[in-house]
Length: 554
Image 1 (spheres, helix red, strand yellow):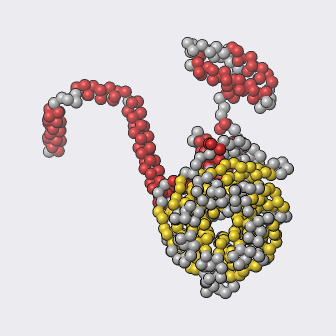
Image 2 (cartoon, one colour):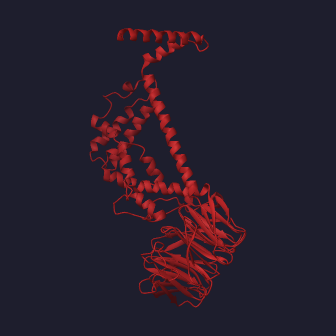
C-alpha cells in the first residue's frame, strides 16, 4: 500500500512539473497541486482511503488528468512520438494496448526501417502500405529480419563447375535470382541461383575479367585491356541478358577510355562507375554512354562503392570519399591498412564503410556529417584472417569477407549500428568512444577453398564466392530458414495450448463449489483404495440405467 501512495505523490509531482512547462495554462491548478503534495500521509499501516482523503485531494478533474495515459493523446501526436523509436522498442510498444498496437503496427516508419536496411522489396505493388499478398511493412520487416538470422543455422553447399581457370569476380543479382562470374578464362558466365545450373556464357572477351556488376537493365564486365563490355537486358528473355548475342545484335557495346586494367565496377540508376589501375575512377552517363567525371588518385584503384551523390574508393593503402557531381574530395584516410586496401563495402544508408587490406584486417568507418564538413571515424577493427582480405560484401546486418587463406568470415555489426534517429536528421550509429575490447569477434568462419578466395557476394539467404580453384561455391541457408519457420510455428502452438489450459484452470478455480466436490470425492475414493469395487459399482449403475431406459421404451 505504501507503494501506491508513493506512486500517487509522484504522479502529482509530475503533473505539477507539466503545469509549470505550460502544458496546463491554469496557474491556480499548479498552486493546488503543490499545496496538496505535503498533505499525503504515506503510512503503510493505514488504508488507502484514510491516507488520501477527499478533503486533502485536488478536485476530481485534476485526478482524472493524473490518470490519463499516452493513448489519450491524438493519434497524430502518438505517431510522431513512435517515430522516434527503434524497431525493437516499437514492437514492445505495440504489445501494450489495442490502440497502440493498431497505431504502431501500421506506422509508416516500418517502411523506413526496411528500406534503409535492405532497400525496396523485390516485387512492390502499388497498394500504399502493403503489397499484392497483403503484407504490411511491419510483417515484411519482421520476416526479413528473421531471415537474416539464419546465417548462423544449417546450410548446404553447391559447387558450380564451368570456368577453366581461377574465378576473379562473382556478383549475385538477388532480384532476378541470377549469379554472374568471370575470371582468367575471359568468359562471363550466368548461373541460376536456385538450381545452381549454368544458363549461358559469353564468348571469350580476350583478357582477364576482374570486375562484374549488374542490375535488371544492364550487365557490365571490366577487362584488363581497359574496356567495359556491356549487355543490355532483353525484355523477351526470362534470364534478362543474351550473353552470346543470338537474339538481338544491338544489345552489346564497349566503353573505352581507361588506360589500364579495370578492377572495380558499380551501377546506379543513371551512372556507371569504374575504377582502374590507371589511378582513376570514371563516372559514365548510362543514357549517353559518355564519361562525365574523372576522379584522379595517386595509386592503383582497387575498389569503389557509390551512394547517392558520393562515392568511396580505395587507392593504394588510402581510403577516399568524393562528391560525385563536382568531383570534390570530401575526406581521405591515409594508410588505412598496412599495404594495399583491396576490399571495400558500404552500408545501404551510406553512413558506414568497411575496408579489407593486405594486412588481413577489416576496418569499419563511420561518415559523420557535421554542420560545415563531414569526417570519417574509425569504429571497429577485426583481424579474422591469416592472409590478405581480397573482397567484402555487406547485407544488413552481416559483413562477409573473403581472404587468401581460403576462408570466409561472417561478422554481425548490428550492435555497432545502434541508432538514435532524427537527433541530427539522420541515423547516428554509436557512441563516440567504443572500447575495442568490447567489439565481438566474427560469429562464423566458413571454409571456401584451400587458398585464395578472390571474391564474395551475399544475398538474403545465399553467399557466393570464387577463387583460385576455378569453382564457384554457393552457401545456401534457406534450409535453416525453413527449419526456423517450423520451430516458430510449433512454439506458437505450444504457447497457444498453454494459454488455453491456463484459461480453463482459471474458469475451474472460479467455480468454488465444483472444486469442493472434487476434493470430497477424492477423500471418499483414495488413490490406493480398492479400484475393483469402484469399477463394479459403475457397471452396476450403468446396467441399471440401461434396464430402466428399456422399460420406458416398452
